[in-house]
Length: 454
Image (cartoon, rainbow, N blue to C red; front, side):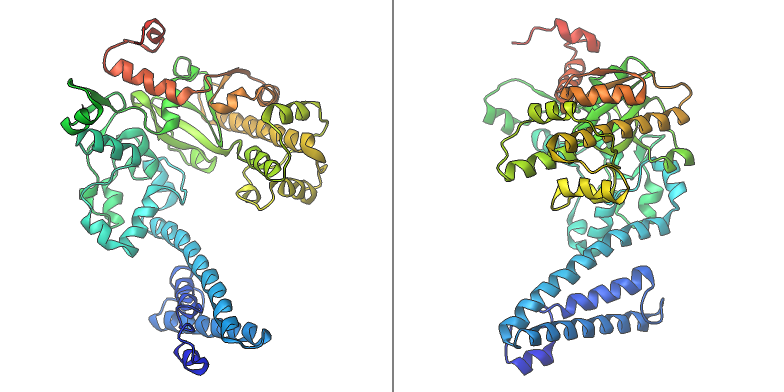
C-alpha cells in the first residue's frame, strides 16, 4: 500500500483507504475463525493468509483502475469500494466468530439446557463478547450492565437493577433459577461485576428522585414499577393465555411470537431443535415460544408500493387479497425475505424457484403472504403440541396484527383451532395493568375494569 502511495504520488492511496489493511484483516479472520488459508492453526499461517489477501486486494484495485485509465482518482475510488467490501465481510465473520467462541465454551445442547434461549446473533451475549475483544476500554469503565428499560428506570430512580423478562433474552440467564448464569459468564471471560441484581415484574424499583420530581412538578412520592419490560411479556400478560393453559398466544406484529405460558422452562433437545425459546414472563412464568417472521413482508410490500406512487392502505389490499384466488405458500422465515431490494419480486422469485404459481398483482401477492403466515402458525401449533402434555385448543392473537381479519380467519382454518383477536394494544394494557396491581389499585387483572382513572 505504501509502495502504491509512492508510485502514484498520491497520499490518499494509503493501505487503509484502498482496502489493503481491511483485506489483510479479512484474511486473518478467515484463518483464525474457520481455519482457512495457509497452514491452518499456526501463527505463520495467519500472517501468510493475511498477506495473500492484501496482495489480492492490491491486484484487484490496480487492475480495475487500469481499466479506467489508471487515473489517481480511479485508484482511490476503486480502493474505497473494495475497502468497504472487505470491512463488511470481516464484520460478518465477527458474528460467526462470536457464535464459534460461545460454542467452544459450551456445547449448544448444554447451553440450551441451562439458558433455554435460541442462539441469535442479536442477543446480548454476542455484543458483550465483541465489546470485550474490540472495545475493552468501555467494558473496563463500566460498573453495571443495564438493558434499555433498566437504563430509564435508573435515570428515574437512581437504582441500578435489571428486570427479569428483558434479561432473559440475553442468553446469560439460568432459565430454571431465574438468575445470572455465572458459570457461563466466567467461561466467556465477562466481568462478573456487570451483572447486578435482577428484579421481577411487579416490583417497585424505587421512587422518583427529587430532581426528576422537581422537574415534573410533583411534591409527593411516585413509585417506579418494574413491568414486563420486554414488550411481548407485557402483551402476553394482557392476553387470554394467562387464564387458560390450553390457550396459546400469538403476538402479531413485524415479528410473530407464537407460544404458551408455562410454570417451568422446557429445556429438552427436542425443544431446541424445534426452534423454541424460553423467555421470562410476568409472575415468574416462562414464555415458551417460537420467533417467526410476522407482518414484515407485508409491511415492506406496502412501503414499496407507496414509494412507487400507489396510494394504497391496508384495508384496500386486504380486501383485494380476500377476493384473489391463489394457493401458493412461501416460507416466510426464508433468508430471501430478510431485507430484499424488491420484496414483491422476492415473493415471486421464491414461488418460481419452488414450482408454485407466481402471484400477479397486489391482491394475489398479499394473499400469498397471508396464507403463508397462517400456514406457518399452523406448523408452530403442531410443533407445540408435540412438546406439551395437552394440545392447544385456542389461539389468542394480540398486537396490531390482530386487526387483520383475513389473517385471523385463515389462521383458524389452517390450524383448526378457535381464534380470538385482541387486544390490539396488548403491550400498553399489560404494562398499565401490572403497575395497577403493584401499587394495589387492583388485586387481580379483571378488577382493572372497575377502576376509575382521573
